[in-house]
Length: 136
Image (cartoon, rainbow, N blue to C red):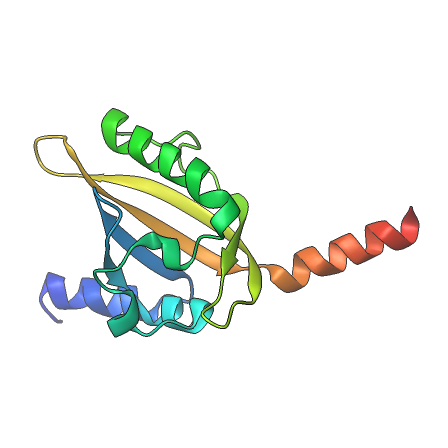
């Protein structure tokens, strides 16, 4: 059995959902292989950069307001419930992603960053919208 830190890394890399960890300033610190696959940015392109690389421009102001509020309060508005939102692939293609967010706290209970899990639901959403248009 590997040491716990190695096992944690294996788990993060093997999960099929994108895992993104950002520090209190919104700089990307962790970007797993599923994030590379989903958003198209390599680790080298993403790490130390801003979350803005995957946030559509029109959603950046509300995202950062929520992010900073979560860092200050130590909790997210959604309390771990998934939310459907838009994201941007490196190619510029718009994605629908289902995301969950959590505030990461140090042993003293202070918010040190945020972790998000994301999955691509673009195909499902587009099919639902096409069906709704045909029915309506």
